[in-house]
Amino acid sequence: EIRGKSKTITKADFVIDGSRVMCRRVIACKFNEYFASLAYNLNQEILANCGLPIAETVSFEEYLSKSVKNSIFLRDTDPEEIIEIINDFKTGKASDIPICVLKRSAKLISVPLSRLYNNCMHKGEFPNAFKTGKITPVFKKGNKECIENYRPVSILPVFGKVFEKIIYKRLYSFLSSNGVLHDQKIWFQKRPFNYPCPSQISE
Image 1: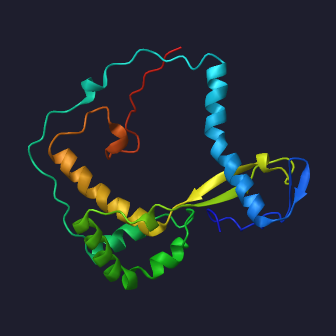
Image 2 (image 1 turned 45 degrees about the vertical axis):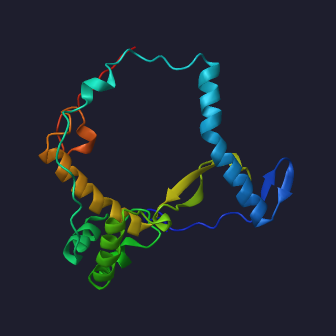
Image 3 (image 1 turned 90 degrees about the vertical axis):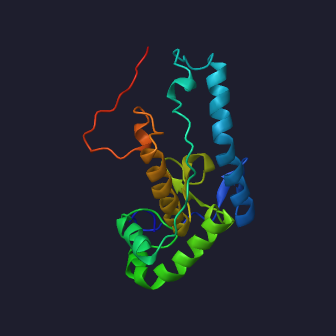
């Protein structure tokens, strides 16, 4: 189930290079080749059109904050923090494990998860299993037999997202308390919903 919508069954056959293909391995490889080529093809198209006009911007050094002598310390997490993070997830979001199931079992899994995350922080590791996403082809419009009429949707492991939020809270606390975040780095800071967004528009 993706974002609360009913799951549709992907076609068993596709027309690839003028031939009808039913082998799932071949179809998966062709989807992978097509999705991997999207960024490259878009870049080539932009370069062929003389690139994008880029306005002059200030040097990145203008956004660098003062040096910080303090060292960051990642404090251990606990079951209460994990439960709070899980409860903040929106139920309708895409996930490898249904969010509603995760919320109902939060109290049961929070203890072993806290031990896992604390062990990862002590070792300075982010498990590879948390980095592996599942790519699902989602039909857009047109002929369902054409691979080009599908777009990729990546779903990352939800336990990796929980760990990311744990790390984020500690990084944000350290950076904000030491005055490292620049005023214009609003994307990394907590702001009210109606906070004005500074932007620069150039023709």
